[in-house]
Length: 382
Ligand code: NDP
Ligand code: MG
Image 1 (tube, rainbow, N blue to C red):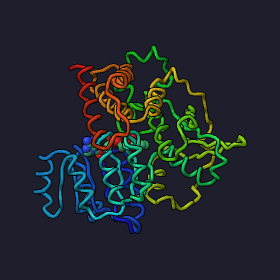
Image 2: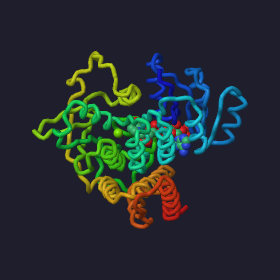
Image 3: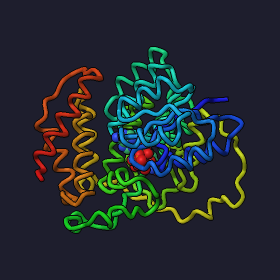
Image 4: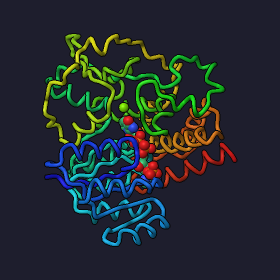
């Protein structure tokens, strides 16, 4: 039996994680969860999971109100509350389904405390990849990624001898504006951007998919997780999102992971620590999913990808600048304060102006994040 703490229970990955925990009641016991502002989800989660005794929310006032309603629960709030929840809640496994930089300290805390970390929060790996890998290398905790491409790659790599690997082909839908030219992007709206063609996800990652910063992050994530180097990970445009990624062997053979675009599968794989029962699914035939369309990736159409990769190659605190500037710009776009094409420009501005440093500690990354947020907010104005 795994005791589980779920961070980000009200989100897209969080709610699907609850489904998986419920599906495998004999294996998982939910002992705690966190959410941000959407406290209306609390009663429903507690009804479904009476084993919960620890809860964390974003606001102090919400925590205060919840304490009155649920005097038997231990309730925390804010960023520090997330750390206290991880420290106090009896759990073997932490699912980090938070969005953005807010997920980094919880990821590091979980590994330091030797937890099995099921990680959807890719920003943790982008910003703190070296720190996370350092902890894992020193024997602290375990890491199972929750991202459809990386679960696909992990499964495919488990089937081959590593010396036979030539490269990884990471698939990309191209997001909500894939049929538009760059010229047509100057006036697109928040509503247009949130209509993803193949996946239903939280707002931030949906915008990251439209700029393809998400794919830049995922190539970095692949390097951190599989140590392959970003130059051996090639993005491949794939319209239907059925092929979750491919690996190419040195003899030219391609191996692919194919299934419906549904995050329950990758979440289940991570939570089950790779021991997913292989059951034939009725009606899941290749021809049902067809046709499949693939196209070459064009970096001029999606400059966020080369921007992310050059940041990663620069190393140091560069990815913290990349991530923080992207977050501020994406939320400014969502609040209709910044045109879509300006998101990449803000990231470029931040990478060119914020001070670079080698070998940052966690505290240095937190400082870089705060400095970058301030600088980009000032640059955007308003
Ligand atoms: P959502 O926005 O749907 O959910 C985010 C969750 O985090 C919510 O529970 C939210 O609370 C909580 N949260 C947000 N900010 C804070 C904060 N500052 N402090 C505490 N809690 C906070 O995001 P997704 O589920 O879409 O994505 C989560 C992560 O998974 C991201 O890193 C994303 O890139 C990654 N991912 C997502 C996929 C998907 O299909 N959605 C696929 C692959 C990866 P509340 O809403 O209550 O305020
Ligand atoms: Mg993905």
